[in-house]
Amino acid sequence: MIKLMWWFLLTATCLFICYRDFSKRIVSNNSVLLLCCFLLSAVPIYDAQVYLLNAVGLLLLGILLWKFGVFGAGDIKLVCIFALLVDPDYLLLTFVIVFTPG
Image (cartoon, rainbow, N blue to C red; front, side):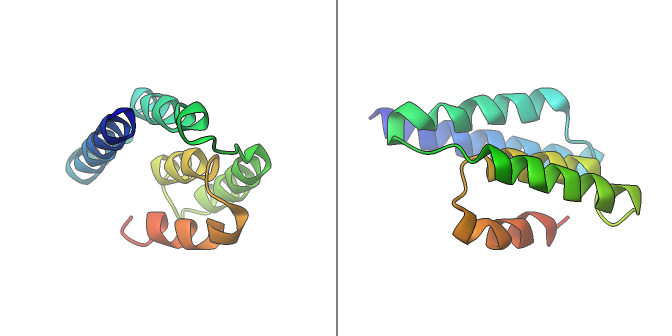
């Protein structure tokens, strides 16, 4: 039951962030922090690993892309948060999924 509730809350949070991003073109830091808390709560629930190096690497790359106007800062924040729990084998796929609609 806990896992089902976790997925529901994660989906609701992601949908809220998407709605705000599409309607107001803003991804607030509070929303990203809430998403980060939900994702990090998966560590004890699913015995997941945290890939901090992936997130830091994407943050540095994202800052560079943001500086040149390629992507927005909100998209970069989201992909960095998701990169905390995404296996390195699927990191490129996650990068493409987050940045393609944006």
